[in-house]
Amino acid sequence: MPVYFYWGDDEVAALAAVDDFIRQVVDPCWVDANVTRLDGADRNHIKRALEESITPPFGTQSRVVVFRCNSFSTEHDNGFISQLETCSKLIPQKCHLILLSLKKPDPKSIIGKVFNQIAEEKSFILPAKWNRSGQIKRIQEIADSIGLFISTHIAEELNNAIQGESIDVANEIEKLDLYSTARAITSESIHTLIKSQITSVEEIIKLLLENKSGEAITLIDILLDKDESAIKIVVSLTKLVRIWLWISLFTQQGENNIEKIAKMTNIINPKRIYVIRKQLTDYSSEALIHLLKQLSMIEMALKQGMPSKDAFRDVFFVQGNS
Image 1: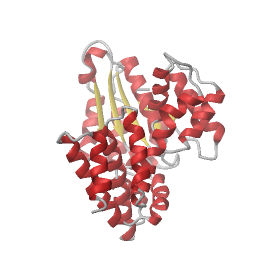
Image 2 (image 1 turned 135 degrees about the horizontal axis):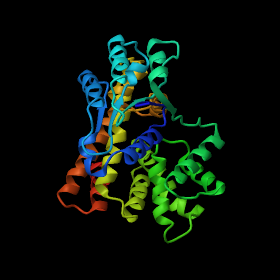
Image 3 (image 1 turned 90 degrees about the vertical axis):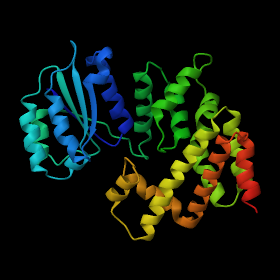
Image 4 (image 1 turned 30 degrees about the vertical axis):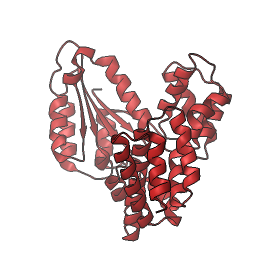
């Protein structure tokens, strides 16, 4: 089948599968010309995705069109369905259309029936937080995909470190892979490379919001001493604070449409909104806005050449207490 339907909330695994597929069928010399990634949220991209999927590839290998179609899993867009059904019959053998969605449409719906007829389906589902064995299995599968063997014991240690948070597990395992070229992967290496980093960003923000600047600076110093970029730390903190602020403001306005909030905050998995709302119970939007201003000041100081540790201390200690 030239049409593939990848669905599920494990976006990291789904995108990894897409990249692996591209590596298998697309000539590396023609990647820019033969690989197109489009978003169904932009209505103009629908026509383009269908047109490109029936356009013969450059070179001797294949063309791949990757199309996000989250909205079409929940809405019966008859125009899109009709075009997709017609297009699927015209796709050349060396062209492939990959449809990406967080959800699987109802098999009894029009689009569900069409997908079942024209697409090869593959699911990518994150194991539930209570499904410990499923989480460990996922870690081992990701490790296996990059050629790294992780024992069940180490997978359990890694799972404990991650604690079900929204972290790119694949990237963390790749770090362990690099680390293992010199040392065996141990509990100590997991703590050194991952555990402290995973908890740091959220923990730093919580400490700052609770006026515990000293403890926050200690965690920041740990990251800096591990050669983490100061700008990268600021960017990570700013990104999460902005997400929290948006969700806080939406909550104040009485907005309960989780899908809408997720779209506005660029959160892939809407279920995260529920978790973040609980985290924000003790923090005001005013405090988040103030923290954003402080982070902006730190970023400016860093870009002006101030030493990393001094920049954080100057804002969180000196100016923060003035």
